[in-house]
Length: 540
Ligand code: ATP
Ligand code: MG
Image (cartoon, rainbow, N blue to C red; front, side, top):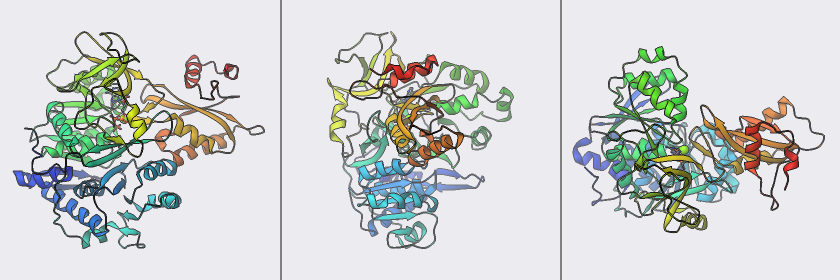
């Protein structure tokens, strides 16, 4: 049954308070499992009261509709509760991947003009370092201190204890801004895709129609809440339908994951191709240890799902994997496989009912089946981003000839199935995370020994793509193991661990075109041909 937004379109309200009204109050909203195996259940009533308490925390600090709040936490209950609480107060609510370094943080918090952020003590120094460049930032709330450190660095538990558990969610319009997720482009700073509260309609619909979750299901989405999958399907979609979820603090770990699937009797599992490819490395006998009889099916998102993975899962797990395609900008699944639709291994499936997707050439002309071109979607769905925060111009550039241009290339077969081909820009997709080559190049250039840099993504068996950097170093500098470590550490601290180059090549100069643009395609061709010797002669 579609969710009913007539009384209020607020995401925080619909995922918690409304669930209590319709009889789900005592139902488990989520089971939290930490790294030591500690298990704690939260009912919808508890999720409601705790998120209301946090809404009051923010309200008591003086925040109001439209102010910008961010979570900067590893997977945690506080992240989930504060996210929903902030939405209840109608703040613009962003989440930041916990591995972000200081430059990555500054770009995002600065662009968003963030006013309040929730984080943990060990991350505080990263924020303190950039704080003076964030004039709008007023409060930092720490989840792991008992007492306030100052008027601006405050204790979560102390604030929560002082806050009331009842909070009246004001009537929220469908178009009121809600969630802000930053995504990487090939040039310039990351862009903040802003969504509206009505996006819940699509997250709910796709949870019903694609994931096909049922009231008694136990759903587990492995994505981190720092990314769109972690909020759209780790929070909103399932809870808009009152479905119980598992939230596990850890990252990939074959043993821990399969223990979780079996012991928690997970029925539907949403994960990523990189994780599935890593599982394929386990011996077949490993999978005989676990009772997966409750698991109905597996969904995948974020990168191409190669046919071998589907065939492996059928053989070893006896389950189907359904590939789904979407982006930060689209907010919810747009194209996908699903139970009831024949899977063509290697294809991302067909568009969701009501979504018009097409392949067009660079002039906007529709291309016939079998021909590769730009993957475009007809604008107007409810979870479509409403702008790039403080970047209206780039937002507008994504719409041409009546289509939203996704930046992906694909083709459609004669049965209407979509086949992902690649990206039309230089954005790197490593382990399902988009990395901007520009961001990595900028971080590299901050190192005094480095003169020039060019960064590309190259195919990788597990990660889909890996980050490879080409650098030229200053005269009289020697390329040593120590310097290489310094370079890696710097990129990790400034950008993030996922952006850290897996391979670094020192060359004489970086190929550039006449206007000085790095010719990443040349670097890529050279990498693939593995003939790196004469790259400096390619300057044109
Ligand atoms: P998350 O940010 O949570 O990882 P996401 O991967 O869906 O979610 P983005 O980071 O915005 O969102 O990445 C979107 C891009 O990822 C797409 O434009 C496409 O290049 C790639 N992608 C996503 N799903 C698929 C898929 N099923 N097959 C191939 N590529 C995909
Ligand atoms: Mg991704």
